[in-house]
Length: 85
Image (cartoon, rainbow, N blue to C red; front, side):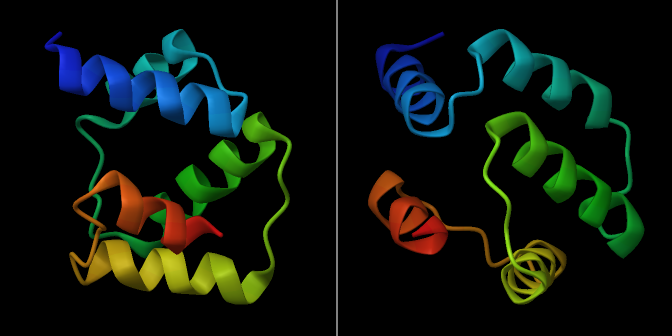
């Protein structure tokens, strides 16, 4: 893993309290999932929320799901931070 990717993963781990290993496990588990399927995305969002022990509102869940379905994922760490704050 390159240094930039490692830094991003460590920051995600620090901010979310989800271990890098768990992130990899989730990424591996969903690599063949249909990420245009709303049901699959909702399951993933809820799973990550539970793992991080950070409940999210139904409105925030809807916003995240819509963003993923519409391919409007934040492209930088700063925009990712604003997205989840």
